[in-house]
Image (spheres, one colour):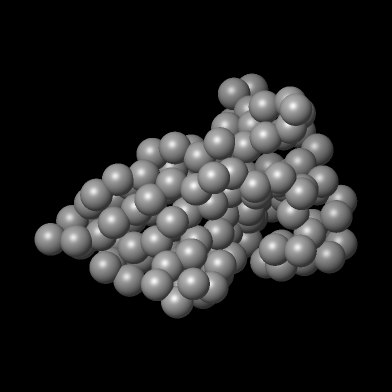
Length: 128
């Protein structure tokens, strides 16, 4: 059964850092893109970052560019989201999602519609 599972969320003070993990099972990441999304108080699921095939093939939303870094370790079937300089506005449930790399490369990385497998989410709270 194909699935992705997020981990690494928690409470962090403003200005702090956190690294989230997204581990895939039932399929290998080699041919899959992984996107990170979040859903905060606005209840809209915002696309944050995506790795399509390799660390050189990554994309970021303007809201996190320069603060968040996405990376993948295909040998561990895991994608990471390193989050620095966290702000209270970053408080949200963070989700990862998987889709075939070719689909995302063709259709675009920041549309929820193209992702097939979603995790249950991990909570991130940024508060003093």
